[in-house]
Image (cartoon, rainbow, N blue to C red; front, side, top):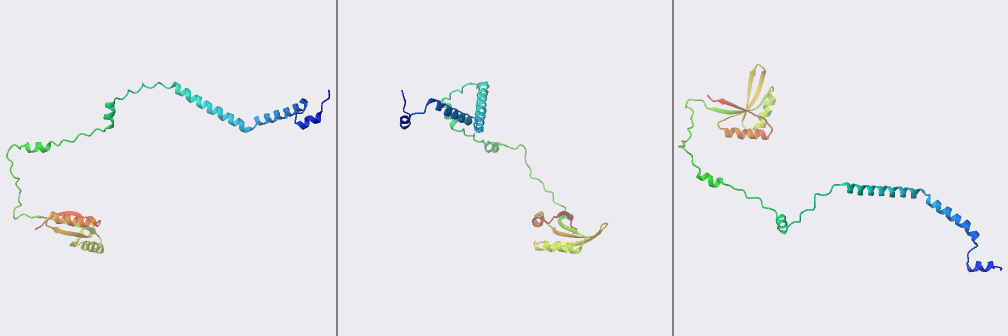
Length: 200
């Protein structure tokens, strides 16, 4: 029986089986070329690595000791007290009631203030605002103190160390006047030295 090959080509039938074998070999070789691409090897490597890490983590979780046990169920009363913060205790001041009840045993006499004898010398306060080798330096310090509203004096002294010019403030009759002058000089970064002298 004879076949009409022209008819089979028009209808779209396949070629004979012997021609299909070389095409299948070509497709097979193309598929093996796809499998040997370098990107696919790296993908497989990282997939295996991630699988190993995951399995190691699961193994670690399996070796952990069990928890102490389930937490006890909270009662509604305990939950209500836990949500409200406790007020700190109020301080007690008992000394208001205790002090009026205290008494001192024995008579209390006023302290005697010793007054100086009339002929004794009273002490006066002086402030030394500087000691300088040069007269110009002492006059400069005196001018600074005059601008503060104080009354400085410059005294010249001769000693074993040579000639010195000392700037003094005072004499002050009361401790309050001396304190006021000292606070004014301290505000201007002028160091002072407190001296006590007996007045004749």
